[in-house]
Image (cartoon, rainbow, N blue to C red; front, side):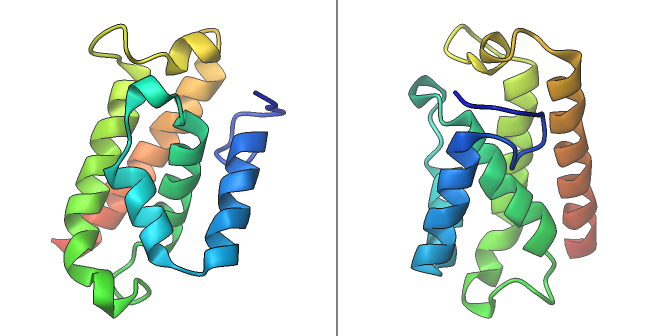
Length: 124
């Protein structure tokens, strides 16, 4: 993994994911990354990249109307996965191991969770 910092866009996997998202110009890329997440595939950084776009664009006035019904469950699912990344329920979750248990990466993920909770509150 080529990572140069803790933000969801500061690593090679995330950079590749963002490029694919913009190349396809399709929100299904983001939705599928989140809904099909499997901790054993270790796509944590791509997942965090997708969550970053979700937390940035996941406002009901910005989000594409054709995917609006999916927005709330998608945010809830993203929050659940991010939470498990920093509080793993079992040994299948290797995110913290990949980052050496770094307090900085935990803080960065917690910030993503907080941003997504804010978005969720906008939908209530």
